[in-house]
Structure formats: structure tokens, C-alpha cells
Image (cartoon, rainbow, N blue to C red; front, side, top):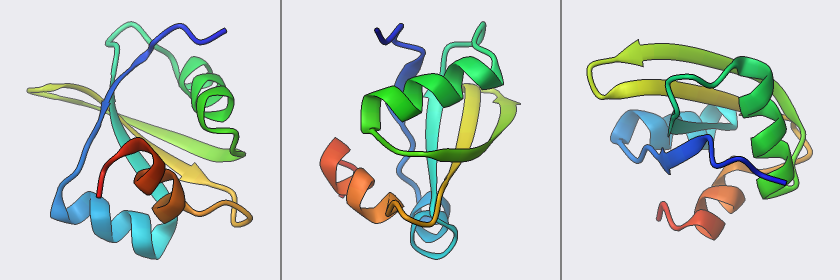
Length: 84
């Protein structure tokens, strides 16, 4: 039961480095979404374990940086959702 809080992934040079080095994924999310809702949706949609969610409000919208548990690979998830 996903609620489509995730609008789209963010694919920049910085987010690619975070994906490789820090096991993090970045998304633009709905402005009304909360940390716990984003965590739940990422875990359900991608079948992963989320350690933390950091949020920033930017000119382009609300951005969430999600840190995955070490047993999951952000590179692999990024490949599945078409970032590469």
C-alpha cells in the first residue's frame, strides 16, 4: 500500500557519490510527507531496511536523503529504478 510520496529520484554527481560511498538514495518527495512516512514507503517499495531519513526543503521541492542498512546496496536499488 504505497501512497506515492516519492515523486522522483535525484541523479546528480553528488547523489551518485553518496550512493557509492555512503549507501544513500536521494528523492524529491511530496511536501506534506513526514520522515516516518517516507521511511515506510521506501522500505515497502524497494524491499530494503532504512536506517535514517534526512529532509531538506529546496527551491525545487522537498528532498529526502535515505540511508540504507549495510545489507542492502544503494547502487543495486539505483540500477533497478533506472538512475544509471
